[in-house]
Amino acid sequence: MIKELNLKNWKSFKDSTLYIDPLTILIGTNASGKSNLLDAFVFLSRVSAGVGIFQAINGDVNLPLLRGGMEWVCRKPENQFSLEILVDGLKASQDYRYSLTIQINGSKAEVFKEELALLTYGKGNGQPKVNTLFVTKQEESTTPGIPTCFSTGTQGQSREKLVELNRSHTVLSQTETMNLRKEIQDGTQQVLSQLKNIFVFDPIPSHMRDYSSFSETLRADGSNIAGVLAGIEKESREELEETLTSYLKKLPERDIERIWAEPVGKFKTDAMLYCREGWGGDTSHEIDARGMSDGTLRYLAIVTALLTRKSKSLLVIEEVDNGLHPSRVQFLIEMLKTLGKERAIDVIVTTHNPALLDAAGAEMVPFIAVAHRDNHTGISLLTQLEDIQQLPKLMAGGSLGRIATQGRIEAALKSRGNA
View 1 (cartoon, rainbow, N blue to C red):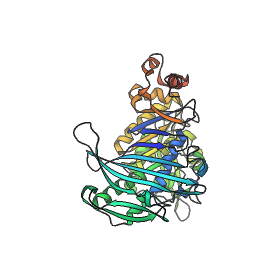
View 2 (cartoon, rainbow, N blue to C red; view 1 turned 120 degrees about the vertical axis):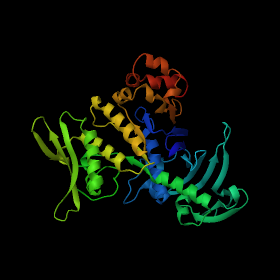
View 3 (spheres, one colour; view 1 turned 30 degrees about the vertical axis):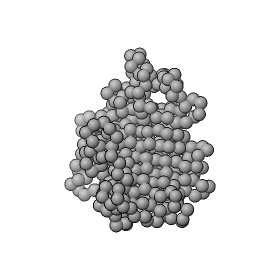
View 4 (cartoon, helix red, strand yellow; view 1 turned 135 degrees about the vertical axis):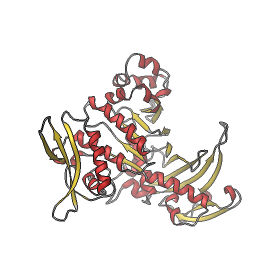
């Protein structure tokens, strides 16, 4: 799993780190940097799948533009940004550290530096032993390709092999077709699998109300949810629909008796989402997605994502509680914790909702990060909520949701000189 993401000169961030837990909540005022942070996950997911760096930023016919595009991907006035992740190793005492630096030159975006290292920890709290598996060789990078040094000796120390690769794509994405030493293959595959399994999800109810073709994976807007559910094998589909229904029952005033999707049309290659509502006694009726509320559809899409994504993946959801009544956010928090743990999926969510913070409670304080801006430079910063010295005093005067609504968290950050 991905443990940390560090951002250097990425959009509004100068140098900040997000620590990732099974459920991570990201809060902050408007324009604090939350969406910029989420865009970093989108970028990493794209380039790990072999998308060119320019296309990953500027989009193409199949990919939407990252917010701000090439012009705003670097913090002004810089022309480079770096993203670094820490990923679980194959052994308990190991991690992989992968760093990627991109240089922007007008309309060009290329790899400037890239490195993958294996970190091995001893019994104490000292620095880990670092074994560099590959690194770009900057002193020779004037050629059209990017010369990259791959470790070929024992523990990566004794010998090296220089290979010239394409600068318009990450080195990591180009290693899949290369014949490399097993230790390097293990590292690149582990990091690639984690990056490819990042899913930044923003379900849009209006996109979910139409028919959709059978699909294997959810789209980022949830528009093909009916096709995903209908395309699952019958036995697995019935079990999944039962789970969906059990989580949806608590959401509305009425009783939801069943949620399902089924093929429609002459050729049965499209699907529609359906819901049976009960109103007590024998009264019930069926509606399709066109009659479902926005909140129900978003909640349904989030549950579906958790049930259908691969284990050991990362699900990122912006404004997770959009469309939900404040009295229902407790069910949302419980669902994210329960399903995330059952499916071994880490979840990162952003929210502005004080009701969600109240529902999270004091036990979630170590897993809440605050995005905020430096009052003098405008740089976005990330601070763990538990690291705010005044937090105990603030919480003595009200709940998390209340102190967030009153702006007291941001005020505390400013008073300690962080903003």
